[in-house]
Image (tube, rainbow over all chains, first blue to last red; front, side, top):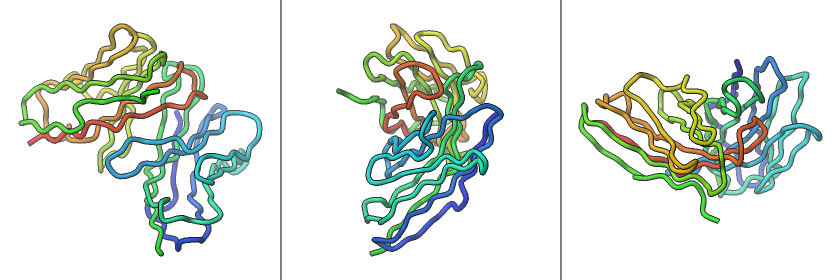
Length: 116
Length: 115
């Protein structure tokens, strides 16, 4: 079974500051990792994904994440926060094969607040 | 093209009533997933379809929950004899095919409130 832990249910930054949202995963097989963003009363929007290959992946809106197998981490970063980045962010893991092919297991979510 | 469409966007009903939630996936997407989002439990997987078949129903919380998919397209999630603990946002997602690497595209959800 897979699991995801997001450290910090709330993160607050100033506009222009670095954004760092932490995600650690547990998986007995090679994982596929995703970050999604959710704005109020909306569904989840894909920010970026890691499947295979390059461990540093770039996504939309200036976000990127690095897959570190040795640390079982997939932290999300953005060099300079913008007010429009305020939302809830979810890290998720899936694996290939088995009966739950492609099922996503989510972390608890991190609410990002951006101060002017 | 159009994204994943869910209806209704909001549903308020009395305890004990049955409800049907609809999901219209992105055209051509063969895989369809249902999740539930609630304050206490976060985002939970309910069921997924490959075509019209549901190989994994392990996430359905009780036998009051059922789902079907017809024509490899529209899916309906039915909750019978609703209880207050069923109050949540029900999210549907679709992907081009099953496979862990395929990103899932989500609808805006149905917010279900049981009085």
